Amino acid sequence: MKIVVVGAGLGGVAAAVGLHRTGHEVTLFERAAELREAGTGIVVMPNGLRALDALGLADDVRGHDMRDGQWGLRDRLGRPLLVTGLSQAQQVVGTPAMIVRAELHRALRAPLPPGLVRTGIPVERLEADLTGVTVVSDGEPVARADAVIAADGNGSKLRAQLFPGHPGLRRTGRMDLRGMLSRPPGMASDLLVGQLVDRRTGAMFGLFPVGEDRLYWFTDSVLDGPPPEADEARRQMLSLMADWHPLVPALIEATPPADIYVDPIARLAEPLPSFAVGRIALLGDAAHAMSPDLGQGSSQAFEDAAALTRHLTGGGPADVVQRLLAYDAERRPSANRMMRGAARQSRLTSQTGVTAWLRDTLLRAVPSRLAARQLAALWHA
Ligand SMILES: Cc1cc2nc3c(=O)[nH]c(=O)nc-3n(C[C@H](O)[C@H](O)[C@H](O)COP(=O)(O)OP(=O)(O)OC[C@H]3O[C@@H](n4cnc5c(N)ncnc54)[C@H](O)[C@@H]3O)c2cc1C
Image 1: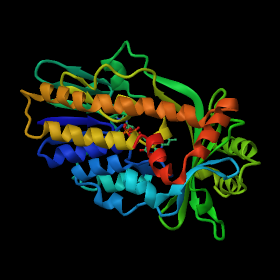
Image 2: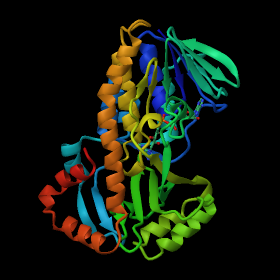
Image 3: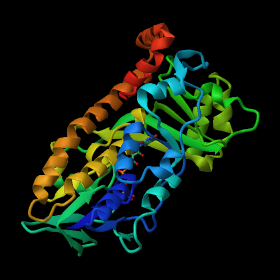
């Protein structure tokens, strides 16, 4: 079949590889002038790695397992709330990978032949009829396909075209900062791997090693008004976290503003009624944009890509509509469950006052032999 994928993010690239490898004639349109993924790290959860396995893409990602050590939830001073050894957690949850985003994107797109990806082409709309779909950019048709996969990210234009009555993205009133730096010599950063939460402000700081020599950190805090520039956001976070465990402000301070990214957090206001409309399917954030609280965005996109590839293998123009409906039936319930889980996790870590005190008390009371299982439950693993 002739299949067009719109959007060369992590999800679109993974889908293009799967569909190309199973014999379809794939074209991938990307609006950016070149293929790239913005800095910092990303965690790929065990379910995401299994999906990449199915696509034959996991080998280059699996080498980036997290280092062993203590991991879990702590209070703002670094005192354990629910902490366990990573190896114990992995026995329950499986092994996630922590990888530099740009390296992940490079590894995923490596199998794509030259010419399959066409950059600098913003797809404006899709015109579907009984025999196929015309892809339109800048008012001109740029392709005709038997099926189109819309992987154009959380602000998806194509989603808005397919579901004009859907409210789309909604800001959550929180912002995340992400930063990456070389491991500062002599800093005992492994002490804080996992997340720290502050019941006074509802802010959160997360820290994960990336390989042997780099650290990835992120914050989550209230956003009032428009998101600040990286310089200003870093200054605000240093002030907000000045009296946290001393490693927290030290790590933020050691990160150059150019290596800090600021994201106002948004998620779909409501789940979509379907991930498939005729010959068009949605994938990744376009289908189920969620807050990053469970670290599941890319893993869900990889699950979509693997499922789509499986459902379209051996298919043709005559049965593509039924096959895309089967993809929707498989993926929508679990992706939407994850979207709700991410919203719940955000509420849990951003609690303040009495409810946060209660949360901390309950977490501290979990016996250490049950910590790994409890953490897995919190992470919906
Ligand atoms: C702060 C933060 C931290 C996160 N941390 C994690 C994490 O640790 N683990 C994890 O799994 N997920 C994480 N996520 C989520 C993850 O980044 C996304 O879920 C994932 O990147 C979605 O991939 P995608 O391919 O669906 O969309 P995107 O990566 O957004 O890709 C969409 C692509 O489509 C292109 N495009 C858009 N419109 C058009 C158009 N009209 N025509 C052509 N091309 C178009 C864009 O340029 C882009 O290349 C995080 C997100 C945030 C905000």
